Image (cartoon, rainbow, N blue to C red):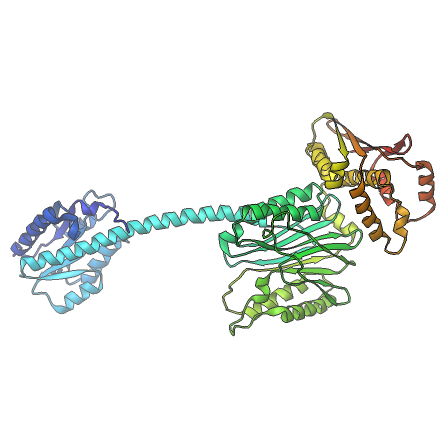
Amino acid sequence: MPVIQTQSLNSLRLVSWLPDLDELGELELALDALARDAGVTGESIGVPAHLKHTRCNDFSEVLSLLDESSEVFPNLILISISALAPNIKQHLDRLMKRLDDRYVPLVLLGEGCSSEELIEALENGANDYVVLPADPLLIKVKLQAQLRVGNMHSIMSEQHREISNNHKHILREQQMAKEVFNKVAHDSIELDNITHWLSPIAVFNGDILLATPTPSGSLLVLMGDFTGHGLGAAIGTIPLASTFYGMASKGFAMYDIINELNSKLNALLPTGVFCCACVAQINFQNGIAEVWNAGLPDCYILRNDASLEPIVSNALALGILGPDAFEVESQRYNLTQGDKLYLLSDGLLETENAHGEQYGEDRFQSAIASAQSLDAINDCADGSAFASIKQDVISFIGSQSRADDISLVEIEVVSAQSFSTMYAKSTQKKSQQPASWSISYEFRVDSLRNQDPVPLILHSLLEEPNLRQYSGQLFSIISELYNNALEHGLLNLSSALKEQEQGFAKYYDLRVKRLQNLSDGFVRFDIDCRATSDSGELCVEVIDSGEGFDYGEHNKQTKEQAALHGRGISLLHTICQKVEYVGKGNHVRVEYSW
């Protein structure tokens, strides 16, 4: 440890009040010897090289020299014990109060003083005493010892101040970083149908919860658990969150988002650091959840009939495999309004009580069952069910300290209308700047086979500030137009296939096969945007190289029957002010106004 140089190493400022001592020859000899030794050995014995002795006439003068503003603030005080008597305690109390938390050795001198006086003085702040007459060498050695103690105290005080200042600086930086971390890692508080409990064991932790509505109107949720604890585990949450929110807002599919998250973490994180994660995309309109569990404990779907359906892990965690070896295979679940999804980290199941017992899956399942009964009683009105699960875990742990972060998330399945109402963007008319521009995209076979053009187009549209608040409607328009052009124009797929048993699965399997075998063709988007200070219009034209269709006959059939297909065109008519087909049906033009 480096020695911090202080003023006490350069000079000795001695203050004395010795009014009733007649024989001070031994003391003077001791002080002369102290000064001589200091000049030769100096800092090696912790004694300053220069001696400045201030003799006081009364106790008040001693106290005045102890003010912080005093130019001769001492580093050694000598006082006659008989001068303090009979009010030794009162005098020393005043002296200690004036010194406050500063350390200055106090040595008492006396001739024929009693043991009681010495004991009282030492109990109330004095550091040592010398009974005169005494050997000058003994006096010098005692003073040297007290100066060394004072010097060490000065060094320790300075180091304490530095450590304290550094600690305050670290706390300020941690607080700033914590605010950023909480916004990044736990940015789902505003989602009303999500209840969560995130209980870290440190300021920074590796558990992360991300959730956002997507432009398509579904809910995308990610719970992650990075290996390790503290800042080392939290370091991966920022790139994970920024990628997740950035891609979700642009309409990328869950499959593409997971692949990109894995690629980014694999490239950024050191060996041995990865993220166990569960990603769920819930479509409230269709009542379907796509769930991908990679390394987290079994998650659960709590059905309305109180049955529990596990969602097991079937993949390696994010960041372990490179892009070429990584595959995403999600699981699909049908949901009904009132069902609940529970996502959890291993810290919840592995937490222990005072007897070393783990909480475990059985207790967690029992807690969910009890919560379901409580839900039925309270009609889910106050979140008491989730609170009862949380309290069950807390009661099990008791006063036992935890070794891992605990995370638990409950997602309630609501109606599509309720979800839309919860998270609809503000409908208040926002001020906007006039704009007029157009843009064109033509996607050829190689691009159509290997990428989804919808996020690219949507990203371009949302760069226009006037359109950002309408991202959901724009996603529906672009995705419906593109899917119709690709599937019916280029791939010549018939929607009637969806009416067969397992029709949707057959339809999309055939879509994948025909797209991979596609050798020629294109889909072109021509987009024109015009906005004034209080209104605007977006015109989108889509042209494909397919054979087209009899749109007049199609419209007639759509009106006559409630089919399992054709609802995309009806949706466009609902959202857009105008939908019209041109030519042979491979050219459609829509107008969206706000």
